[in-house]
Amino acid sequence: MPLSPLDIHNKEFGRGFRGYNEDEVNEFLDQIIKDYEGLIKEKKELEERLKQTDERVGHFTNIEETLHKSIVVAQEAAEEVRRNSQKEAKLIVREAEKNADRIVNESLTKARRIAMEIEELKKQSKVFRNRFKMLVEAQLDLIDTDDWETLMEYDLDTTNLERLEEQEED
Image (cartoon, rainbow, N blue to C red):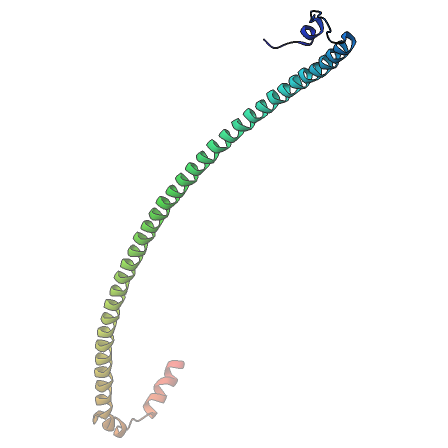
């Protein structure tokens, strides 16, 4: 067990022939007691500071561990978000491809239907043109007939007609 200042103060030395000067020894012991008390006090202060420092280091260690765990959780969450985003992007691309295929197929179907309608209209216009041509040719044939010439030669007596009109008016 270490010496305390009180142990040093109460220490009694035996007397011998030609021993030490008692006042010098007491004065030296008083100086040792003072220095020893100062060292004990300083030791207690240093122990208290060490304790506080250990508590702070422990606190910061806890904070560091918490931050590390938070970083790991954040990294895992970011990875999960990235994976989910990739899955969602793939789904969106698949859906877009399906829609694009559907739109292309619908467009091709419409284009085929329109092409068939155009062909049908061409046929109908040929038929109409041929019929119209035949009608015009028939009318031209009518105009070219001799019947028109005979009609022009036909002379009508209009005097009888004028009399008949006058009678009807009366």
